[in-house]
Image (cartoon, rainbow, N blue to C red):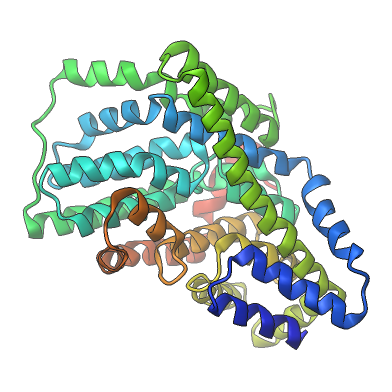
Length: 426
């Protein structure tokens, strides 16, 4: 497998897209092994056609795009501003709170960064915040997106590790709120040092009007979580419900989306879904070759020789994932690593839901670490802020995120408490 890994890393260093690097490296390895090329086509097709839970991905992407285009994000931002805009560095706190609310609708970090990001950064810069800080807060807050349900990465992890997606959704709620609190603490510290502005204290009337305008979007997470918890629908069906609800809000209630806008949203959803599916398909072939060569068994044996202590294993694995996130797209890491690690974690007594939430949070930190920080590229693209400026300004926000990551590893009950309380112990 040295040929496959060597070619893969070389193509990554040359700047080829992750999906193509995985596909080309897999194809060359199959050719070198004398395997018919038709096997690659079969494995790619099977990986994206044989899984019912994967249907949730395009629907959650569709829901997020509808929210961004149908007047929902502006209502969320206004409501968050009324609630926390009067604190020191208020618009930074608004940025985080808006991400918390939007997280319960889109399930995607990049939908958050691309949708709310432009509006948030414009408002912050107009109020006197410097460009780097405005962009860095936006990148850091989009990490919350896949933590608070629904979550596209959690759907994919649940499929790969054969773990309850409903438990993963519930397990991400407390970590998502902890992340928001940690980021707001850092924003308060920086804002006090730099004397950033704050909004006037709102009146009760202003709060009431903002709440009324944002009420229907705000209850979206409750509909999804309650529906899954009480068995009204599966996580995949929840994605369809979220899409229909977003469509009704955008076109029927707010009437801020035209049929032409809907066509554009559908095409954008198809484009984003195709990108995700291509990575899933090519990475699944790569992972299949690894499995055929017993790489997961070798990895499991090697990890267990390091230590059988679950906490030590968690620290070692997460350190490796954190480093890998600097250079490799998170979805590719997930598809390659999770099938190999899942049996090892079970053997070591690590709760798969606990590890899944920690693993996904770790991958989300990679969104803001160059050179592969996709979140940095998205925010730079929508705001016009130089990538170098954005990367430098984001460094302080890695500290609270690293602190939350360690806390989640050392205190698994922060993840498992809510799923156990709502759905019962596993």
